[in-house]
Image (cartoon, rainbow over all chains, first blue to last red; front, side, top):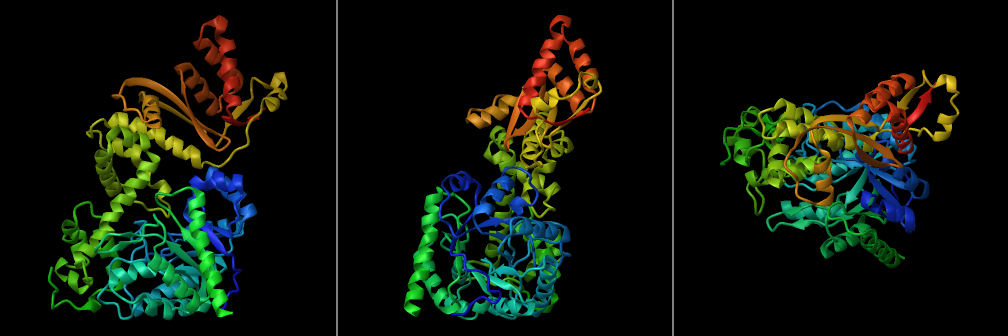
Length: 281
Length: 284
């Protein structure tokens, strides 16, 4: 199996660090491979969230996952924001920093949504240049997540998987591969998720995301509000075989259940990884 | 909408696509109003939608764009509600949603964090004095904003009784106190504590009561507290937070009370505030 290009440590199985679980995590000290934080929640606070994060970071590896890097936006890069990201990464000794392949706003506004890009040569050139500039500034590689999308642009001249594979090479960045997002977008746009996975350069994948979603009948929303469905677990197994076994994180951001429930769901990923490794041996 | 055969796809550079989609997503009306708004039409004519967005197996281009459009307001409303729960409790879900729609139209997020989205809500009620209950809502929102600011403020060292006792008696009169970064003092025209309590306890919100009210918000051990104050307590805390020397501030406070009990009560207040961790240091 390929290793990731930067030899990032395999951190095992992780869960998102969420405020309702602070007490349980610090009190019970569960065996968790790593925690992933939502970067923006810790940039401008000197209060309880940062205090809790510092304590969690003393005991567990932390990875940072942001939503405002806006790598595809035609607005100028926000270096004040990036400086805060860099400082936080140093403070908590983040294992790696990630964000999304999307844009979040223009003209100085932030919609706080992960808006889709048209997959054109222009968008590819533009986004690659920005990602390179971001990595230079942060002085570390950035892992970018494939988005879940709800619309496709007619002017796109390549598929999403071609765009992502080319972006990763041209920007020389990492990928955070979200298996649920592939499933969601495959349903919404009517493509075969295996074709998508086959096109992703495994050596650039730093870790995987898994999450639950909400099926609306006509489309699927990436809500992170439920258990991972069986077809996504199957797709995860396929991904492990095609792209390599990597650290995996379970996201649960809405209707958050007790920590034990989230953790038990995350541990299913470890069972899948063990199974794939056994088969390969 | 039908595809416009005269529209060329090269006519949509990335910047145009982004300005268009943002204009549609943030528009406060329904999806058809958003697509035909002047801001959106300026970038992509609504007749050209099918030349820009594909239909899916189950949704039209309009319906696909509407997914993003619908989620925008929900997200903004949710972010505002997390900082202004008592305001939402008072207004009710639908009126609060309407408020969120009007608010983000005037004060859209320009930050990388949603935590600062609601910073202008008290000002918004001043901008719109004709809005029902606007003066009361301004006071309630100001109190809730103080709570969220106190939550995120930098941690400060706490002034201890021991460090106060270490001040030589001759230095007391001229000493000044430094409040912690989380300290917020509020004077309002309406009573707001009953509304904060009603929300916390899940009780119905009382009718707004016009009554001069005083409140201090502070943080201890990373938890935020609020305390109602009398006019006299507020005046003394206001003096101390404003850098008035201790001797002068205490004398002014005692003078506002009955002479015999004045100093005793002032020192009792003072002990409570220090014990609650409202001050970070004393400057002799």
